Length: 237
Image (cartoon, rainbow, N blue to C red; front, top):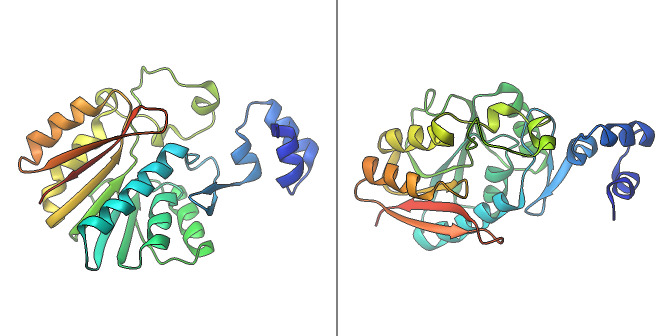
């Protein structure tokens, strides 16, 4: 099914206007207004990133590791929640999660709150720049932060439509990984898990940051379905 056929099947508004937006290189997900993510209907607009398949893999692997490592009720924090797709999907799969999610963008949080309501899950949403408004400790921190370097080439359809606040980061895309890892000890319980989606060339740098800030931790690297480095899981015994 091509994009025009897809629009005709799923778009509920004026189809001619929708085709015109498509011809102007607007992502079809924004035109339709929602996506299927991990079996859940997630609203998207220009205030949030369009969820990718790789992030579904992050969710799937995180759920598996949580089941393996924790046999109690746990507190989980999603940093840079965007549409809320990660935290909503995990919360729907695991009953023992007390879920928190933050974003610096109030507009993104409005989308995430609507998605949580539509998916019948309770999430505590917080407007915060990383840990700036966080007072509690958590068992699990998960994040798909902005990780694209400012001089990195990306597709025009992404660059021209999706929020740069959620795409780009200083320090060659590593800024938020260091911000999280350098402060994590203050916000983690004794037994913890940190789950990141990463850029395919960033593992060695994130591993160096882990060794610097979480000396007794271990790290697990997972590849995505295309064979690219895509997820890291940092934990202690």
